[in-house]
Amino acid sequence: MIKTGIDRINQFRKLLDDRRVGLITNPTGVNLDLRSSIDILNEKTNLVALFSPEHGIRGDLQAGVSLSAYTDDKTGITVHSLYGKQRKPSEEMLENVDVLAFDIQDVGARYYTYLYTMAYAMMACREQDKSFVVFDRPNPVDATTVEGRILDVNFRSFVGYYPIPQRYGLTIGELATMFNEAFSIGCDLHVIPMEGYQRSMDYHDTGLDWIFPSPNIPISQTAYTYLATGLFEGTNMSEGRGTTKPFTMIGSPYLDAGWLIGELEKYDLKGVRFRPVHFTPTFSKHKDMLCEGLELLVNDQKLFEPVKTGHILLHLIKKHHPDFEFLPPAGKRNVPFIDLISGTDHVREHIDDIEEVLKLIERDTKVFAERKRRYHIYE
Image 1: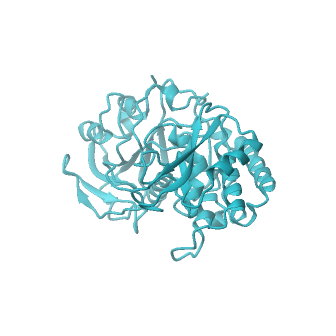
Image 2 (image 1 turned 90 degrees about the vertical axis):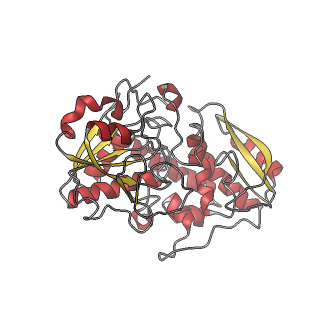
Image 3 (image 1 turned 45 degrees about the vertical axis):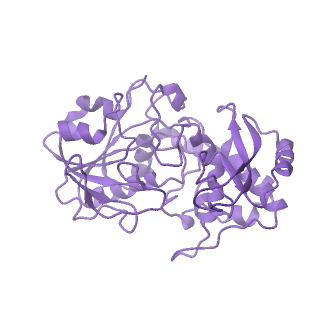
């Protein structure tokens, strides 16, 4: 069993001792004994402020739900929200903080808000002359494999801000280093590395307990299927929210799952099988409606190419189903959500030409796989 960054706090106390500490965390911030990083820092340091990402520090909020500042019942410390209108810690929030720490498990996918909560916090620390400490954690889909299109910064958002691919193959600490150096945040960054970690490990290999980072990533294997099915958040297809298996199933009242499985066989996709299912979401898209769907059963995580699989699914479903739609633009930017998730408008405009889409994925995968090496901490 490896030791994560928080398990090594005693070896790096000089970063926190005699300083007022703020902490960005959620329920995934625990040590090997499943003790919260909040309680650990509250005992060992002068913890003065807590900061909540999407889903809250206790993980009790569904996706998209924002909250106001409140007092944590257990510690009596003020919790500031970094989800909603205020995504970057303000000068007032950091007024009494000397060093801001981050301890959250990511899922290895670019379109995940925790990454940009971290990035915005790093920006604030640079602007306000604060130190930033990352307690490193494993990439649950391994820190070796890269796959996907590199984000076009014209489509940056809170689900994709920097030019990285959908599957970036770095730990959260390595990613912070890349943000800081390659993308010129330039804060006073310190990464507390793991012990015993090898970058080829997926989450199962680490021996760590999986604490789900958000309500819809309930098991570690969901991190793999999320890389495929997350694209469907930008469509009128259900991605399984409101079921017991979110992001492992997609479906809609109009889907022809039998036809779809037959077409998928032509692509000889490795490491995954497909099963027709029926489900009725209790919330989100197609709430209380019977959906015909497809379940992704990953049987070899090393061979599975989730980003490729997701784009092929998108191509086939759009091709055969006249009721399929990309969701219309929303918000002030007037940009379709699929463009923000995929990091480009090319997928929406050219998904009919799947060979071209896959060729560009392969090109960007090779480019980023080489680019990221300089930020590796682990062998």
